[in-house]
Length: 201
Image 1 (cartoon, rainbow, N blue to C red):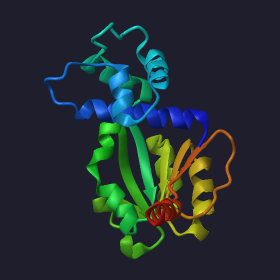
Image 2 (cartoon, rainbow, N blue to C red):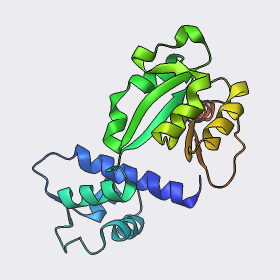
Image 3 (cartoon, one colour):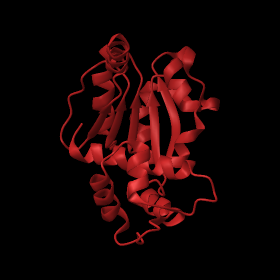
């Protein structure tokens, strides 16, 4: 994970924390956020200064509403971005049917699968051969890959070839791509291994 991805991960954590605060809390300090989330106080202050500038007030901190809005804008969650899922299996459809992505400005507009039995245009699931034309016509910028590892690189190539600039990869494959595309690998095996190692310590 590069430095920009680490920063974005922290900013998302700040935003999630702010959204969980009860309505009676109207201001929060960088020190409080650092303490609650386990980050360094200096790091949180630096991050918030980059996002909110001089919005913090001595002793009272940042107005929660203002800081939330600035984080949403900085992260781009206030803009609608079209996304597609390739692989309409159980994982793909679970992601497709999850409604929480809209909170972050992501609109999953369709799913695709090479198995005709899984395709149902009335439910937004289309044959995979329609992927490129669909992405080009809808200006799709995010592709979510939930196909088996051996199919993932081919899907990645087709997505990047039709204008997709960010890929969320749930397959076990390591994807080759050029530097103009951002790929985030959701490595479930590594996460499970980390849980098992921590459990055994």
